[in-house]
Image 1 (tube, rainbow, N blue to C red):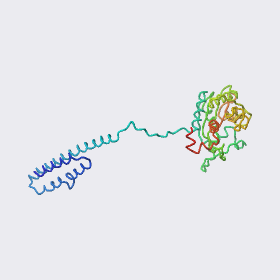
Image 2: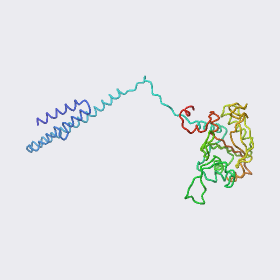
Image 3: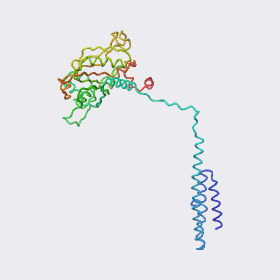
Image 4: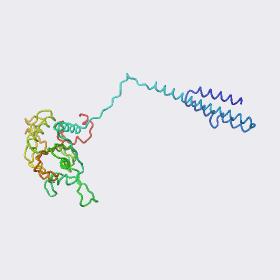
Length: 346
């Protein structure tokens, strides 16, 4: 019994004086472990008389519980002390200069697209979207471009192969323009309305400074009872003036597109020389910007609208091309090369 009391006192001192979690763990192993001093005493109980063995056993168990409780309290205390010490060592120095982090920026095509959507939105145009993987019907047939129409050669198309395709199902392709969106929109909405449809399109053609296999295009559509090309010209003149931040002139030249009649090429005054003539506009003072015209009656019919009751204009232009003119970028491929030196300029 005397030996057990001495052991308890010795173990209490070791636990209370432990200055770290490692020292405390060593003390627990020394007194409470499988080969610890208290365990060694418990092993000798079998040699004692029964009455002493019972008394010593009860005392030894009380000692173990007491030491385990002291160890748990000391562990909590040491952890709290270590945490407080760590806070003192790692406190924030508010006088120290902060680290500079590089912020990301918007891509120039994202910037120009948002500007375009904001300007047309101020004129009452809603934004419409459609799938990039289109059917042959929406990309060609519904736009008055049947399979045997020579105008299909104007669009070098990525066709999607599907050997298990149902013979009755429509062929799929990567859309060559955003014009299919106007047909989808007309089918689901009652006129009058005005929309723009910006999005990515795909052309199977060689790349150079002004051509890419993928680029961004914007389709515009306005349908009502008394819509004319005069309305379109005013819309374009207002849009270009706001986009380039100065008064712009617009002219229409007769042209052919299967989905409009009459059709027109849209020129704007050169942003480089203001219409006086330079190398950019080939000394004409004009730069081609879009294709447009009055929606063809067959397009209205394909979308389920009576062309005798409604009329409207449609137009389309490349967002990349507009960005090249606005930011004076000589090569369309620069938008897709992910050169950080180029992108940081915006």
